[in-house]
Amino acid sequence: MTELPRPRPGSKQPPAAHPPTVAIALFVGFFLSAAFVALVAVVIPGVLLMVVAGLGMVVFFVLQYFLWARWLYPIVMKMEADSDAKKNAAGGSATKTFESDR
Image 1: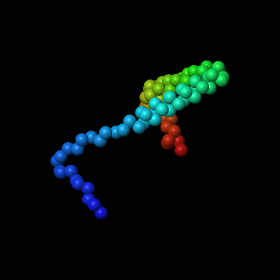
Image 2: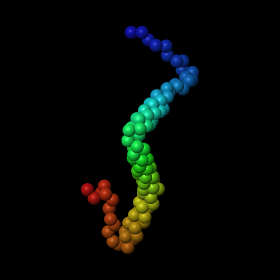
Image 3: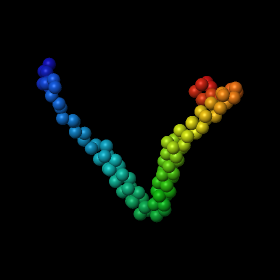
Image 4: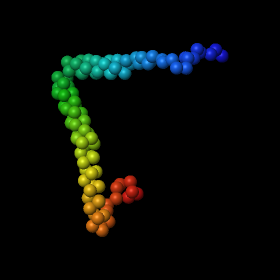
């Protein structure tokens, strides 16, 4: 078996260049999808409206994700923790989280 040359200790190797395969795949996928929609729109004129409605739904769901998962979830968890702390201080039994209820 042949041995490959090893770098000297202390020598820095240049960072490996990453080929833009993902970017190329996304571009080709977008281009082919747009071409397909354009060809179908020639036959069925209402297709463009359906595509715009579909994109609108995707944007709506993405906005909902960022609104609830990224922005409001930590606020709700803090409010729940504060409520549990007040119940514990008052001597009542605090509600448990979902994981501990099992």
